[in-house]
Each structure stands twice: as structure tokens, then as C-alpha cells.
Amino acid sequence: MSWTVRARGLAKWYGQVMALNDLSFELSAPLVGLLGQNGAGKSTLLRLMTGLLAPSQGEIRLEGGDPRRDRALRGRLGYCPEFDRFYEDLTPVQFVEALTRLHGGAAEAARRAAEEALERVGLQEHARRPIRVLSHGMRQRLKVAQALAHRPRFLLLDEPLAGLDPLGRIELTRLFREEAAAGCTVWISSHVLHELKALTDTVLLLHRGRLLAEGSVRRIRDLIDAHPHRIAVGCERARELGAILARFEHVRRIEFTGAGLVVETVRPDDCYEELGRLGAEGDLGIHSLDALDDNLEAVFRYLTR
Amino acid sequence: MAEPAAGEGRILDQGYRPFLGRRRSPARVPWVIAAEELRQAWKEKHFRRVVWAGALPLLFFCVIVFLKRFMPLGGFGGDEALALFRVQQFWSVFVVYYVGRNAIGEELRTGALDLVFSRPVGFYAYLAGKGLASIAAVAATIAAPLWCLGLFDLVWTPGSEGLRFARLAGGAALCGVLVGMAQGAVVLALSALAGRGTAAGVAWVLMYFLLGGVAQGVSHASGSPEALALSFSGAGEGLFASLVQGGFARPGAPAALAGLLGWSAVGAGAVLLRLRRYRRGMP
Image 1 (spheres, rainbow over the protein chains, first blue to last red):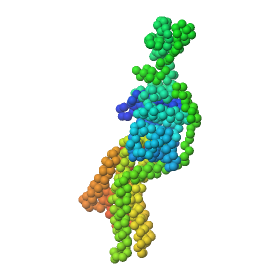
Image 2 (spheres, chains in turn green, red; image 1 turned 90 degrees about the horizontal axis):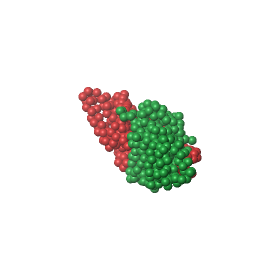
Image 3 (cartoon, rainbow over the protein chains, first blue to last red; image 1 turned 135 degrees about the vertical axis):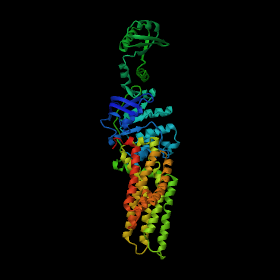
Image 4 (cartoon, each protein chain N blue to C red; image 1 turned 90 degrees about the vertical axis):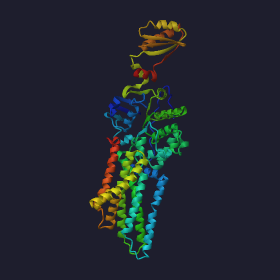
């Protein structure tokens, strides 16, 4: 089962700078994307969740526990920070082993766990070279390995895919999905929409320290009534279809494309019904309907503009 | 392991795989941190040289004890022990330099401290581990050669008393720990404040020798030998002389003890102040 994260009136400020402002949410999902532009407060939220920072106001609970005070709870977290500077003279296996031993494992078990984690992130060939000679991508993998080695119940990953080559992204994305499938709750922060899109449908959208939205991207999109919904209609007789659609009150805009048209509507359900009816009649040659706004880009664009 | 289809966002909960290794008590965390700290220091070539070179004075003093049996110089006494203590205490300045200079500053500077505190490591357990490494290194540097010398005297010199050896061994151990506490706390504080290991190390060595000069000056100007306890060397020597030789020693044991505990408190206070962000609300 996924862990529940609950925040109530959570705020964090650094001097005059408000990093997080009055966040309240309750989320329980195997894979959660923490989305926001740089400076939105993603890293601060993750650091509050790991107990590294104390809230200036409000509270945050992981599975009912306070990560700041509950040492056993912290033992079940795996945290991958944003920075990639370590103990440069250590080798990856020594580094991961040293950190894993802090969880109370015996030296031999920690060594085995470290080697296994490095193998999972594809770093086994470089496990005995000093960290200082590793490339940026390898260091990213090392960060993930140290978070995984002690087999955490909850993984908090701060921009884990930043700076990785395409193959590395695919491999780590697969690894995160595997972890989630194995029952580990995984939270991943990113400011790159397509990264999260490939991983999860459940997101937490932050903007300038405020929570903009939480939950499924489609559900969030449905809740944005004020913004028109765009539907791409593939059809053979686009001009005639446009003329029909223009008579509907809920249609705001029609844009013709090479393959048909894109219609903007404020009542998507009614629009789909009409298009379905027209498609069933078969006169206009409607062959496809695509919702263009059920994706992260659209949601984020609407919410932040 | 089944992989969920990305497009569908399907998640297959196959159950959490628990850690199968043996868990140890959280009380072991400081020892794990200390061991790692010493292992890191040992990797430095210069540190290993300092450690090996620190054993040379023991050989010299063993030769003196060896020769004393054949010469009318008197038996093994507190003089040799005090002289060896002085040498070893001087050597411990460089030992603690290598063990402590990077201890906190490097982790603070790089942000690696986050990796430590996101784990089940308490704030005080972390500090205890860092301090333990310095204390162990200094105590071993000071006490081990004195134990060896005392043992050699006990075996070699006719008429040696076990009681005298016990007193020497106990005094050396206690002084080693207290000197290690004071020196370790100050080096950790410098490490935390300076950030860069080399800067912290240089500041430590300068501070050690300058403080020796200042203590001498204050003692001379005020006419009070107790003022020598302001320096690490003066306090250490005073305490050791009081414990091992007994009788008259300057500075006396109370002043020496106050000096060493005072520096320990100053160092610990500075570290706590520097790391207060991590300390708040943390067990």
C-alpha cells in the first residue's frame, strides 16, 4: 500500500523569502510527480518530508509520523538530493556502504546491499573507481543507488533524471516504476513535464511556493472549468463540420488543421456527445477525437498563466 | 517483476521487500560514524606517516629505559613518562588535524550532511561519532606509547612496581581522552566554521601554538602558573603530571581539568551553533 502524505498549513520561509506558503494536501499514490518551475518549492517540500528542515508553520506527516522526530520513520525513507557532491575520495561502493551502515545494518550486509543497489542503477562497472572521476550521469545514478540500498519504503527523489543521457533516463524511469510496483511509494520532483508524464498521472503542482493542484492530471483538467477544453477532430470535411460546431453555444473557437480541426469548448462533455452523434451519422468523415488538454503541459500552462 | 504500462499508469503492488540484513542498535551509530571517519583519515598518506612517526619517540624512550639498568642514572620514573607524554601530545596536534579538519566542514559545504540526516541518525549521535573519532585518535596517540613504555619498564627493570604501571596507564588513558575531547571539539568547531579542510587544519595548528605562547605570556605577566592551563599543552601536561607524578605540579589538576573541559565546551558550543539548523526539533 502507498504511504499517505498529509500536510496542513505547511509553510517554510528562509528569512524574508517564502519558500512554501500554506500548503495543505493529503495524497496517497504509488508514484507522485512533484511538478513546478525552478524555485517553486519542490526541494523544500522534499526536505521537509525527510525531516531535514523543520516547518516554519504547520505540519507534515508521513503515514501519520513526524519525519523530524521519528527516527524509525526516517529509517524507511530513501532520499536522493538535488546536489551531486559527495565524499570525492570514496568509491561508489564505499560511499553507499557507509551510508547504508547508518541504518544499523552489519558491515557485510551493507556491502552486499550497496553492490546490489549499484548494479540496479547500472553502476557496477564503476563501483570501485573514486567518485571524483565519475561523470555527471554516473553521479546521478550513484545518488539514486544510495537512496535505494537500504530498501526504503518511501523514495523521495529530487530531480533524479537531471543531466542523464536518454538511455539513463529510460533505465532509471523503469527502475522507479519497478520500485513503485514492488510497493514502495515514490515521489519524484522535476520541472520537466515530459519526464513526469512518462512516469505518473498523479501530480502535485507547485508554483512560487503555493500548491496549485493535486491529484490525477485528467481530474485536475476536468476541474478547470474556466478554461476551454481543446479537442482535435480528425475528419475529411472539416469546413462543413466547423460550420455545424460554430452554431453551438459552448464552442469558443475553431481552428482548422491539415487533418481536420481543433475545437475549443467550455462544456467538453456536451461537445463529445455532439461529435459522437455527428461521427455516427458518417456524413462528415469523422475518424478520430483526441483530447489535447489531458496532459501535464496543458494543465501547467493553464494553472500558471 | 511486472512493469506497469506507462500510458495506463497501472501500478501492481507486489508487496514491500523488507531489508533482510541484520539490524543493529541505534546506539551503534556514533561508532559507525567514528570508524568511517578514522578510515577516511587513514586513507591519507600523510596521516599514516604521522602515525608511524609518532611511534619513534617510544623507541627512543625504550632505549633509555633499557640503558638505565646498566647505568647509575636511577630507575624509570615520572620524568621519562612526562617527557614522552609531551612528545606524544605534540604529535597528537597533527593526528587530530587529519582526523578532524574535514569532519564537518566538508559535509556542510557539499550538502552531504543532508544524506546523513535523512537517515535514522540523531543530531547528537552524529556529533558523538565525529567527536569519538578525534578522541580515539588522540587518546591512542598519547596513551598507547606510554602503556608500552610502562610495560617495557615493568618487564625489563628489576624492582618495578605494578602499581606504578597501573597509575601510569590510567593517567595516560584519562589524559588522552580529556586532551582528545578538548582538541577534537575545537578542531570540529574550526571545521564547521571554516568549511574548507585545509583552512580549518591550518587554523587549528596556528591556534594550538599561539595559545601556548599566550598562556606562557599570561602566566609570566600574572605570576600565576595556573594560567598555563589556558593552552592545550599546558593543561594536558599539568593534568598528567598531577596524576602520574603526584604532588606538586603546575598548573594543578583542577586548573588543568578546567582548561581541558573549558576548551571542550567552547568547541562543542561553536559546533552546536553552526549546526543549529539541523538540531532544531531533532532527537
